[in-house]
Amino acid sequence: MPKRILITGGAGFLGSHLCDRMIAEGNEVICLDNYFTGRRTNVSHLLDNPNFELLRHDIIDPIKLEVDQIYNLACPASPIHYQYNAIKTMKTSVMGAINMLGLARRTGARILQASTSEVYGDPLIHPQKEEYWGHVNPIGIRSCYDEGKRCAETLFMDYHRQNDVDIRIMRIFNTYGPRMNAEVGRVVSNFVVQALKGEDITIYGDGSQTRSFCYCDDLITGMIQLMNGEHMGPINIGNPNEFTMLELANEVIDLTKSTSKISYLPLPSDDPKQRQPDISLAKELLDWEPKVQLRDGLQPTIDYFKKELNI
Ligand code: NAD
Ligand code: UDP
Image (tube, rainbow, N blue to C red):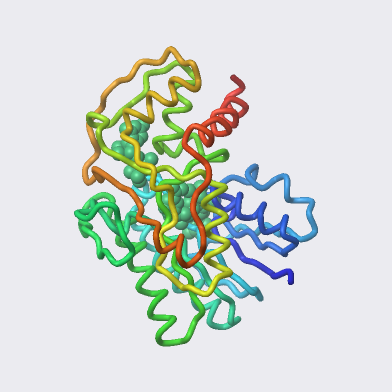
């Protein structure tokens, strides 16, 4: 049965892929965005679709809409952007969550929060399970994002306990793919763009820190399964295959056949040394696991950036 679905942050990287999937499944989509990091071009191919509506709005302000489901993705996700205006980032996470939860309460809509592996901070437990409470600096430069997302999780749980709001909490681990914003400074887009332009690949620190990269299609499948399943979470969704940043750089150089060299820059403060999701809960409760391997996901990402950069 088609639903009317609100996707906040819908013009962003993940939001736009979710809009595509929701429209393809025959739903009505309201895509809400303030275009801080998102772009109309990410959804311009949907503008003529009668089931698609694009709204310029900031979720720190309340809004009244009639919807069946809400995916709350609005929030800058890259360190460069969320640190650009840290107070606004915190407002987006906290006031945005309150406004969207209020909307869910009024309409009876189910609401999913795009939370993050950052709630685990610089983890002392490896890999990270949902029951781990994290190791987070409350006063550092990443705190506006980490603590904002942690507070949003608290609000989701409290609206559920106190007001019976139907919630889902998804902890997203590093995700990449076409439509990542080249300006956001995330590692995959930086390395791919640098390799395509023949510029130095910038590794922060010695490149031994690890991340586990999930391809966007896998992530969106997990998100939709969580929203439409029985379990409210929090549930980790990510790819458990772990790589050092040096391994990633070499993989990108290999796939792009680039002449780029590697240059080493200082490691930003509070940069987590390792991150890998334990996805046993997602496997057991959602029957979900990622299918796309890093090399297979890097190729369409490289093709996307080639087109974007006219290379
Ligand atoms: P993105 O920056 O491409 O998308 C975020 C979108 O939210 C953008 O379109 C932006 O313009 C919009 N936005 C920001 N503040 C807003 C506000 N106040 N009101 C309305 N819209 C606003 O990032 P993404 O990678 O697509 O991330 C989507 C969500 O997933 C975010 O909540 C992010 O924290 C979460 N997440 C992403 C990753 C990842 O690796 N991509 C990892 C963990 C969590
Ligand atoms: N990183 C890097 N070079 C870059 C951008 C990022 O070495 O040009 C490193 C960064 O320091 C971090 C990892 O890559 O250790 C992942 O960074 P990203 O910003 O993508 O995500 P996050 O730190 O939020 O996981």
